[in-house]
Image (tube, helix red, strand yellow):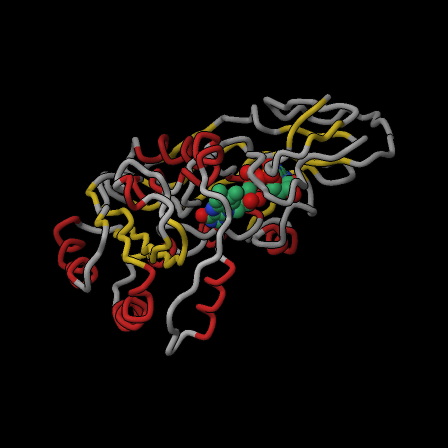
Length: 313
Ligand SMILES: Cc1cc2nc3c(=O)[nH]c(=O)nc-3n(C[C@H](O)[C@H](O)[C@H](O)COP(=O)(O)OP(=O)(O)OC[C@H]3O[C@@H](n4cnc5c(N)ncnc54)[C@H](O)[C@@H]3O)c2cc1C
């Protein structure tokens, strides 16, 4: 069985059973000794969800999802991607903090803690994890929650995938949208020191509804970015305001009017922010991506780490 990991390395596993549902283990359990890898969304860049000469347990067919709008909760199969979970919860005007890229798996992301567009208002993904169903190394099916197996629950909230195979997650979800104000704004990298100064003061006073991500990088070839800007070193501030649009307009006004942005991509709609970042792993972008070149921030008066931009691809 051949499968490529996220970085494109070809792995040859002995077997790759795909698991659409959880079958309860029978009384007689077989015993085998081999490497085992567990695959959720397959997005982990370390390639740990595949292995050579071992067994890959592929949970990607586990797409069952149940949303309870009254309890504001969602039970989600471990093979779901964030875009799929968002689509179902948004049908009820609900959302949980998830990744900024729609095709990241909910399993690996949740087990690693989970950061995303709603986190300043609603916490990390694991703050919204109510319970999980797992298969342990002994083959037992258990629930981990604040009331049941709470030490295991503690471990899976950020400790990664080695505590068992999670088959489903139950999340608390929150009223969001249906529209949010989101998108990226770009400045020339030459303006980075001024933009960083401004951003430091702006974000210190920003309300919890606003989550931002600040990047020094090359401009992606997104439709909202003019072609002459593609590949140019830029400051990108990605934004999601998870509150009323009119309030968001007021909160974001200083960010929009500061300096001379080369692109203002803020839009009032659900998930443009996540879509705006999907270039990262889109094969079409990967093939058009400019070759790695170094660029330099002219001066970095208050942020010693901005020298990291020197090695930015
Ligand atoms: C383009 C991109 C954008 C990202 N954006 C974000 C972001 O916004 N926020 C954020 O927090 N993270 C982000 N990440 C990191 C991402 O959360 C991790 O890579 C995560 O591990 C991906 O989960 P997955 O299920 O898709 O990965 P996989 O490669 O399938 O699995 C990753 C790890 O989790 C284990 N695992 C997977 N499923 C299970 C399971 N059901 N039970 C037990 N172990 C399991 C695997 O064995 C492996 O070790 C991003 C990564 C990429 C590549």
